[in-house]
Amino acid sequence: MVNPHTTTEHKSSREEALDLLQGELQQANAELRDIQNKILTSRGQVEQLAQRSAQVMGEVRRVEGALEQTPQRTLREVYTEALDVQQRLLTTRSQLERLQAEETVVREKVAMLQNVLDTLSRGEPAEDDGERFNAREMIIRIIDAQEEQSERLARLMHDGPAHSLTNFILQAEICEKLFDRDPQKAREELSNLKEAAKEAFKKVRGFIFDLRPMMLRDLGLVPTLRRYLDAFSDKTGIETEFQMVGRERRFEHYREALLFRGVQALIQNARDHSGASSVSVTLDMSGDTIRAVVEDNGRGFGSGWLALDAANSAALSLGALRERVNMVGGQVRVDSASGQGARIEIVIPAGPEVRED
Image 1 (cartoon, one colour):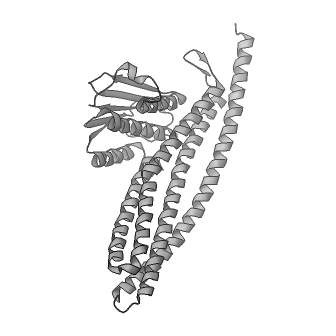
Image 2: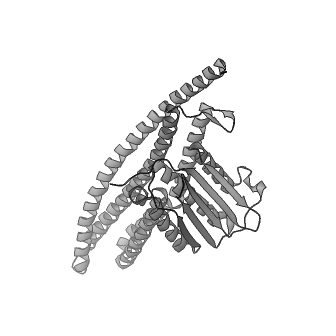
Image 3: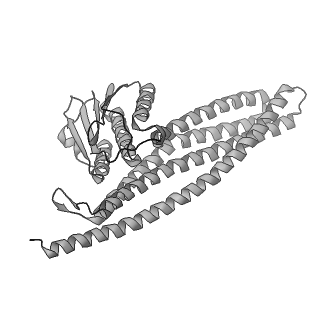
């Protein structure tokens, strides 16, 4: 016999969850629209500055071709404008890339919220491991996952593009001071500045691929993982191997994104914390689940390592991954011992296959 009090309690909990999720989803969608509007504005500014930069650099080439006949004042004005336009272009491009990365983070949050909302709306079981569903706890987990991703974005921005941009501006200021005293030295510094700008853009492209792999939505999980592993190996010197089990298939984007982010986090942990010289990834699409296995030959860890204390960033990252995977009905399994490497498995429901037109 069904206990009416239990039924009412579950219904109340489900309704509370739906209300909370719908409110959070509306807020996330509003944030996404705001970011997308800013992206449109920023993209227009980049296009205008790029056109102006091309005009100014044409003027620079013209005066360099007649260097002896060009008055020093004119030379200084041309180079000063060129530096100013290049600085503004680099700053605006960095802003655009940051907005695009933020868009990806918020879009993933929207997809996760929508998935949980759809699951509850279909009336699927609201219990997990014998514990009654807790709506507020689920919201907290989603927000925590979002915050962890945002903090990672901030760290990458500070260590990558922001640092390069600071150096770029400093070199530009040196060039300005040299124009009057030593035009030849100023031209040499300008050449160095151009190389620094190229290196900065290279870092930005790598940074953006880490945060927003454009191939994932267009080509799917397998090609994106292959490319990421190749790039990771080239950059770090760590040997990588990829194996595919079953027929390659496409799935809902949030499932592919979750698996890609999970594998990415585990590989980066192996690089930063394990001392591994090789990492292998196996992707199994043969059943009604999608299974990704990441193995490394690093120093491994004992069970105590998994205690999620504030000083253990690798364990915190694994804990955040486990929370995200659990939200979609999946599991993270860890097999490791000190000195014996690590094997970490991510398993999530495959869901419906997405057919490409």
